[in-house]
Length: 568
Ligand SMILES: Cc1cc2nc3c(=O)[nH]c(=O)nc-3n(C[C@H](O)[C@H](O)[C@H](O)COP(=O)(O)OP(=O)(O)OC[C@H]3O[C@@H](n4cnc5c(N)ncnc54)[C@H](O)[C@@H]3O)c2cc1C
Ligand SMILES: NC(=O)c1ccc[n+]([C@@H]2O[C@H](COP(=O)([O-])OP(=O)(O)OC[C@H]3O[C@@H](n4cnc5c(N)ncnc54)[C@H](OP(=O)(O)O)[C@@H]3O)[C@@H](O)[C@H]2O)c1
Ligand SMILES: Cc1cc2nc3c(=O)[nH]c(=O)nc-3n(C[C@H](O)[C@H](O)[C@H](O)COP(=O)(O)O)c2cc1C
Image (cartoon, rainbow, N blue to C red; front, top):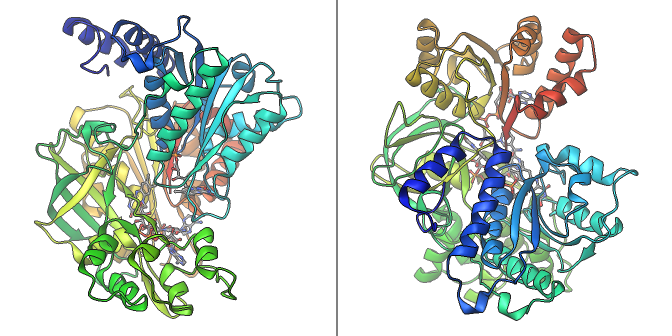
């Protein structure tokens, strides 16, 4: 959508937005770039950011799984437009290295997933770039921003590999790579300022005049004006434990009021949630560092800092030259208790990173429940080093929130996980555990608009009697023929594990028939094990049923946008 500040008349904005909503992603991208350039040329610019006389082309290439890199790329395009670049944004999913090799100025923004892997949709680009026959990039000026999470061993691996590879292929690095942790907004803004300045300098423009102080962290940069810096305080209007009393899991259905927020989510989107830390753990940290009774510090540790994750650099910092040996799976409290020390407030805070939001798939449709968003949250609990561990956000909701309390939330759009625009197209939804959440939203939406496409849900969980999440709703949808087919796999109801992929195998003939009828396959839920095994099973089924190469067949579906995953 065009911003209200566009240099167009109101009726022009309506017409342009209509064109954009009816066009493909590629067309929208091109049009956005063109309009941004037009806007930059039309709106008077502050003197400090005078655009170059000639509009230099700039390609902003991103690789994303959950949308952060894409949002940054989009914001970067706007900022670059203001500096007079003719900027276009390119998703690695839609690009080949050969198409990028002709770019004169290139910004690359890439996240890392899995265990140091590229985002799924960037796999082809990544492989082609790393291949022996990759094109040369002489004449390309570039800079890389890597997104990641320091809790992972291979921190920012993908961005690092891209950076090294572009240089090896002859491109000229104009700014050093930056590796961002989960609180990436401010460093990303500083990197963009610097990289655009360097590119301008390369173009013979004054580098210093280019600084525009991009601040991705400022409120209002995200959908509906709410962000992690300024979340919406949504009231909990309902909170129901869906797991039976004898269940070994602990999963909650939570309804939030979004009244007055203007958060226009679509099924497939998530809500970011800013949790509050466990007060008992905050007390323990204060006690072991000699800060008990410091109320101000208690408040900071509760809401602003990640008091569990122990990153390698912080452990090194604390250990100094001492003999403290890190144990895998240690949290901050384990390190402090292994080598207790009086710490000043500043010294304690310096060991911690900012508290990051947690994301939850929205399990509703605004067409069915206007002004509400429903979430499905499974409490994470396990034990390590003789201590019970509680997931920060999930246990905050499962144990400490009640109806009438508020949750600090903001919208995290997921434009790559949407129902097909063609309401006649069949969909196959594979969602074990909390992975079923977005599919409840999908079904509410298709039901509300009377979509005629067939809907097939494959659900799995531990036990039929305790863990059949939303069972009555699925049965009602089946009865009304909104849900065409439901297959289930309860893993702990028999001696051998039975998972969703086994249900898929049993139904492989029908699955293949649906795919031939144009079905879109969706997978949501656990990334570590389930998504990989389901992926392998889909390859096997496509290969067996199609009599060809299943790997290539699934890949083809992915390229067509008919194999979509939202895994975590
Ligand atoms: C786009 C997206 C959508 C999501 N949707 C949903 C959803 O709809 N519902 C939902 O419940 N969750 C969802 N999640 C996951 C959710 O965001 C949180 O990651 C999850 O709730 C855990 O957060 P937490 O703060 O409770 O746990 P944290 O405090 O973040 O702890 C989790 C960490 O604990 C460790 N851990 C967990 N189990 C073990 C174990 N057995 N042994 C050792 N270590 C362990 C792991 O390091 C793990 O990363 C989604 C995630 C994403 C990215
Ligand atoms: N690595 C992690 O930290 C991790 C991994 C998974 C889930 N989680 C978190 O744990 C919480 C609960 O998750 P959830 O409610 O979505 O349920 P879940 O733990 O993902 O389990 C749902 C179902 O999936 C089954 N399953 C396990 N391995 C599988 C595989 N390889 N292929 C297919 N199915 C498989 C489970 O069976 P069994 O349990 O009987 O084997 C269970 O029946 C969530 O917050 C989630 O984020 C974290
Ligand atoms: C399942 C999962 C695996 C991840 N693996 C890594 C990793 O191996 N290395 C890393 O630095 N970050 C890892 N991350 C963190 C992401 O890179 C980080 O959240 C990033 O901001 C996501 O950007 P995106 O939304 O553009 O994909 C992982 C995140 C998730 C949820």
